[in-house]
Image (cartoon, rainbow, N blue to C red; front, side, top):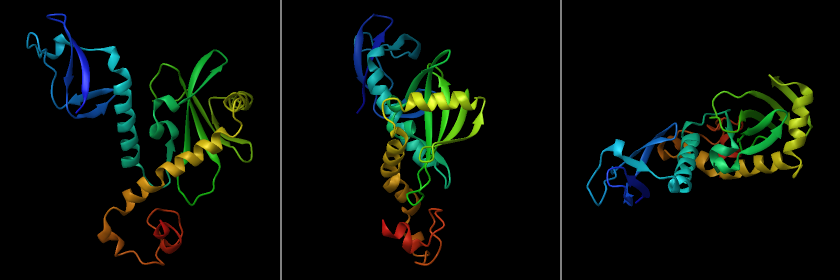
Length: 222
């Protein structure tokens, strides 16, 4: 059951309606299992039914859940995952920098057996979608080292890091650890949900998770 709030343009009545399951999220548009209908006049024409702003928190929660499921479903070995994709839009980093405000996407390796300490930072205008970053670079938070800069100078990259670490100098290591802990079991289930396939994996075979280690020293321990 999913209760959302609407307004009928024909009779000007606000009403709540159980739209059932919400699915097929694309560019913040979605499909409702049950189309809303005005309880007063019976109007169910999509063009005459307005979705009210008071739904924003509920819809954002649904969007966050869908983004999390999609990130886990589409994950492939060796890829990085954005912190915001798992913990929701409110977890996105924000900074004021040079000529405006930016939101920063931080991407990490989530292999539980990898001890890398790099984060890939992508910058976007505050009110833009997360499509093409304005600039990006890699930062090793243990070595305090910058690399692979695109469309940003080293001086500006250092300034961005300084701003992001202003309130918490360990922000990247903490977020990296949180992400790995949160995804350890979901990713294990993703790659090992078919129990029959496990019968074909020997203890000394390479682990299917892509760590490069033997199965007995890797995901067999989970």
